[in-house]
Amino acid sequence: MTTQAKDECMPVGKIPVIRVPARPADQNPGGSIFGGWIMSYVDLAGSIPALDRVRGPVVTRAVDSFEFKKPVFVGDLISCYADIVSEGRTSMKVRVEVYAERMTRGETSIIKVTEAILTYVAIDENRKPKQLPIIEVNN
Image (cartoon, rainbow, N blue to C red; front, side, top):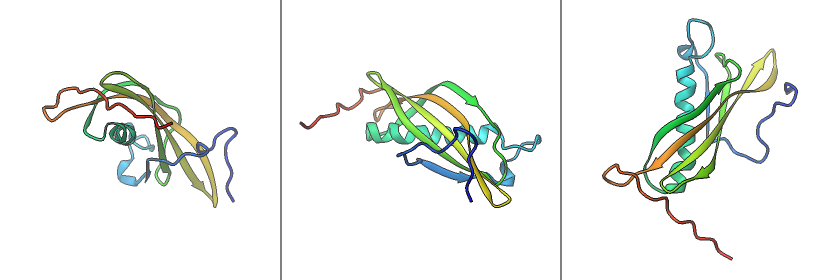
């Protein structure tokens, strides 16, 4: 049986770009998962739509916001969802939302644990910023 906390569920109609279980080795001395572990997966997840948009290399320019809403624990399965929310000439902002599937005594709850906005920059072969490719719209 699956139960969900009030108003918390996976985003409807979206597929996570990354799913990964939290393991004992990822735990901090306080008993939850180390924030840096989550941050690394958020950066990886955010880079996926950026790479797809550019069809080439990107670099992380900035973490514009990062909020740890709830802790992640060993055994949680995290799912990272990422979408481009705005674009500039050479960069884009990507929103990443992280949900944990927490299995306790045969029941699963879904909890939004983290959300962030990151800026990625398209780069050329000399690692210099380059213009985002133009998206052609077919009528």
